[in-house]
Image (cartoon, rainbow, N blue to C red):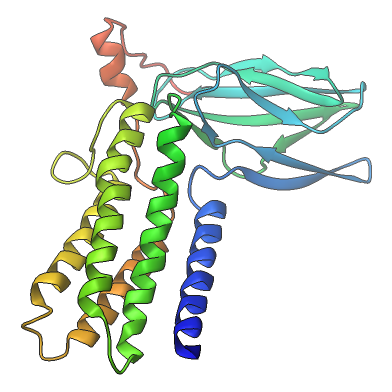
Length: 280
């Protein structure tokens, strides 16, 4: 009994760690930071993902009428000229609205705060890249997230059967495969379709890393399933599969994800591609 409690506790802790890790890493997590203005530390959070809402606002918590701000932006990976949006002071915040982009479209932007002739760039290094998507029904998105991490929980518990004298390897392996299949190959493509208009953009149709990670995990567990009765050490086989899945979950979500090619999009609309040099 104590062993079961220990195994499930370890599984829950590792799964919660991965859920938190995925939440705070990757190219869609907001850029957080701070800057100093007149001896005051001003914190900011700049979005890197637009969830399909009609408006996408850039906000700086700065309730100072003597300050002005602007957002400089252009479409990502294009030779467009930079455009400027002047920020307005509203509800104690300097804010500006970015123009809505098609699904998988990206913008790069920076914020400039000016007071008494002094200008501060936010962030001070490279521009922020924000990706847009279409709305995803909550009744699809939430079950997808739940099933993906439930699969990680069960996979971890499956791997821990390595330390069990009487392991239930086949039961837990099948359970892992079924749950992961539902989360990654039924609900996952539906999420992808609603967000970006395509069910699958991984191998062999594209290089979407999230889809490819899903494919690798499924292949790994299917290999385990078909080799359980043939392997000389099936417990080690299961443990290795659980470790591989854990390592894959450590790869931040949405890296090398869906990205609109503006050149192809403009060409399809009959818009001439701009060739002028980039200006700031």
